[in-house]
Image (tube, rainbow, N blue to C red; front, side, top):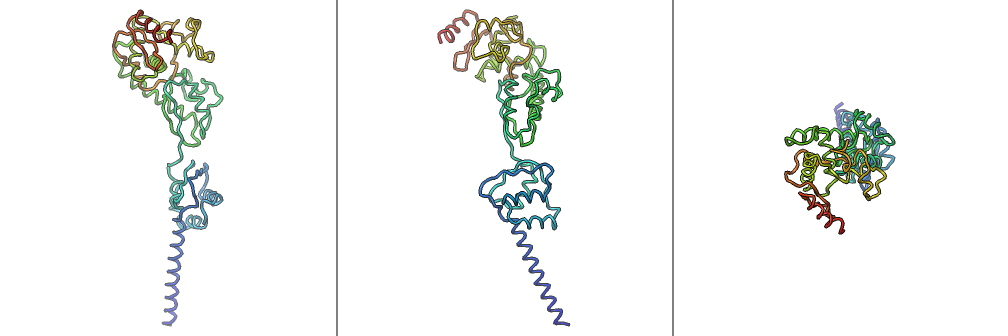
Length: 334
């Protein structure tokens, strides 16, 4: 009897050692580096379960010992992450455990889309249509249909989308980026309007948005925005027409071919500020924060005119005579 107990004890010890060795080997397979030599994208499909993902990774030879991961699901199901749909960048040297943790994290691959200040809404839509990995829900829709999807049915879209760099992941829709840009512009405009100077010749935040779009399109030199705003503000106060070329170009639409003629300056479009009084009916571009701030806090001074020097900056003048001399110097001679 004693001998039998010794034999059973030895067998139990051997079984325990074998089990311990087997567990260590199993864990070593889970911690072993995955079979990658270069960073690789892997997408967790929407609704995919653990076994499907493990099977796909094995088929792509990223995981080599699928048994270890199937055993994990049986023995330690509580340790399995909740897989999140999206693209993930798998790195050489990461372990199977690290791979699973990544697929259950928020570290999906993201892409960027930059909307520059001064672009039109049409240009923004073209960029969205061309952006890779986006779900293109607005492609082919009219501007009015897009605004209806954004719950702004009666609003003209120009100017209402904040220009910036937006990050997104595969599967996000272009409509979501538009919504982000719209809500950011609404919030920014409301905040800046609250900080406006007193006695501005602007009756609403929307007029400030229109003014900001003119400022944005008139100068490529950021430091000039308050000066441009000052000129436009003083002209409005004195009942002078704004006479800004970008409004003429916007009113011409697709007819604009890179040059403005005298006939274009006399054409009575709703946007031609050489013809109409005051501001155009809508913005003509997407203004950034600096242009919005300049619109409601214009620089003080006496200048009423400006002309482009040809280097991205402007010459500002107080009188028409000084302005005409500047035009001769910078435009006609050139």
